[in-house]
Length: 180
Ligand code: ADP
Image (cartoon, protein in one colour):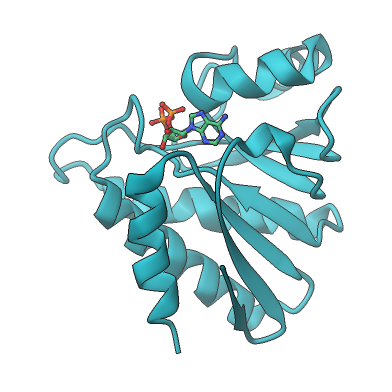
């Protein structure tokens, strides 16, 4: 399904983000930027060694990526042009600023996208895997951060939420259908 918000289209997908031919896919990375499990592992596996090589360069320059921030690399062998790596917060009961940090992931990824002329971008459900962020709370934050961003920015044309399984897909569908 999809929904028009201002000049952009929000699209919902239930499937593997690594298959998408968009300008950028976002990776739910960890602060070491050295790869991991979940969507991070899938992106590095499908994209090949060039992505990790560039991540290592970034680590050399800035020493990893703080939670809520984002960095950009090539997409290697993936059909997208770039991978934006953002570091979601680990859920700790909501007492450690996790909600604000998760919103920062979406905002900072979109900022770095705009700086690189990216017009179509796909997000996974950041922090809802190994990092255990409650899925519904995470979806509300993700959709709010993205819609607020595209209301003030007019360069992003497509934002795709790539859910990976029915639970998140249904949660996102309900919220997106209710958008003004
Ligand atoms: P985090 O550490 O931020 O929780 P995970 O990779 O463990 O990151 O999970 C984030 C989300 O990515 C989860 O909802 C998980 O189901 C999803 N995911 C895992 N593999 C893929 C994939 N290939 N494409 C899209 N989403 C994926």
